[in-house]
Image (cartoon, rainbow, N blue to C red):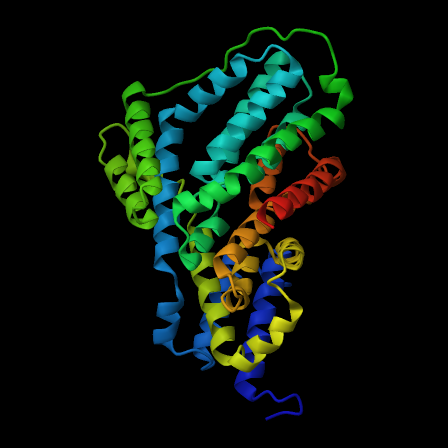
Length: 410
């Protein structure tokens, strides 16, 4: 034992954990070409290789339900995108708006609702080019509309277990049913979307406080009618089964398998939409966090952590929001897991973590993958979304929506 009461294995576990999370926080390993997924895999390998965690325990640490659910949802969303379903829905929604403020509302509501059920990162990939095409056709400034896509995708995804990756993890760890999770967080998401519209309107008066009527434009939409119908029906059936209490991972992967039965789309196009790096990062982080739990987070230490009063809604919201901005929301959820499980009402605590970790992603442009997807897609089209332009909307929206969530879940 050292003077701090830690043995060599515990010190090693802490060092591996800290190094992994630092690499994930900055997005790479300094001096090396290693991304977040690689950092998580290296951290997991070191936990096993250095004897912190037996290999059998490492296998058990990986939550296969979460991996299966995320994989299934990726395949479902890929089929919806490739069929042209998203462009058709978005084109119909924004085509009804004949004023800049109504156009903004259509963009926010469409993005938010789709993100609630079909993974927000994927919806950003779909909505960004649509909004760029539309705003250019209307000769509008695309930046506030694109920022609205990022903000609405995060806010809308708060509503359900399938809205984003961190909610999928929380759904599996907490045992909360899809219906109960949605009932608790839909009001937060709905009010959050309203606040999103109002803030973007108020902070961009030149764009939205005008009397001109927008001309009617159409978004070019190439879609396979049968494939779009099939994908939509299977997706609808999947969501209904979620609400009926069927295991979400099983339902999602079965829906994905049904959609792979097609003569119209080459499988490689669907596989191209599978984010293997994200799946790899998940697997690695499960092992890294389990290594820390196994070696360091003894019952005595967890009992000491109870003094921080994470059972207090405000304290848990604040800790989750700050941690999510430091290391990103998925790693934050995983590191909070052993502490949340010790609380008197862990299911309620998990709902708070889901709310805070997701809404905190709007604080800065770097706060969530969804934000970065929008910014990077826009940059490829010559549209710059800078840090401060985003921050002046994202920061107050984060504070406002966290306050809404705090009030509604207290």
